[in-house]
Length: 166
Image (cartoon, rainbow, N blue to C red; front, side, top):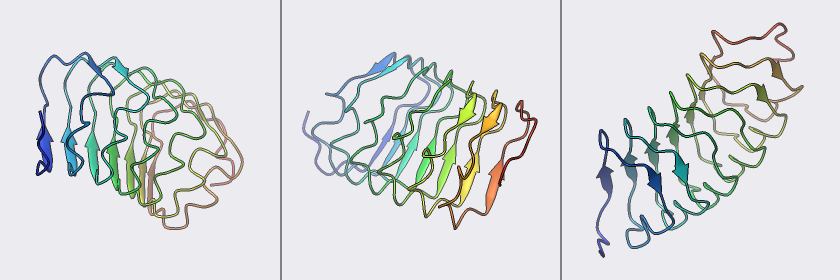
């Protein structure tokens, strides 16, 4: 289906199990996608590649375990990313590399164990970061060194024993 004028997609509270590369191929003007409260377990590597105007993405309350490292590669305009309440354990160090305009990332209530030095290194515009209720044991040195605009960070209810160099 070709919907070139489509800007907002609301698909929350369905029973969607996966997002394939073919999902949004003909709707490049989409700015906002709501996919909360589904049963999403799998995301293809390039599912969001055609969405060059994507500004907000909501994927909370699903069963996502992994995020392909290239999934946000062409989403340079993304400003808000919400992945709360999934099953994410590990985040590839290149996952957010292309998100130069992102201001907010929410990863609360997952199973994340560690924050890599390079994970947030390109996020100069990041202002809010929520990592509450994970299993974070370690934050690598200088993990937030380039996040000069970061105003809010929530890391409550993790397994940290040292705050490192925040």
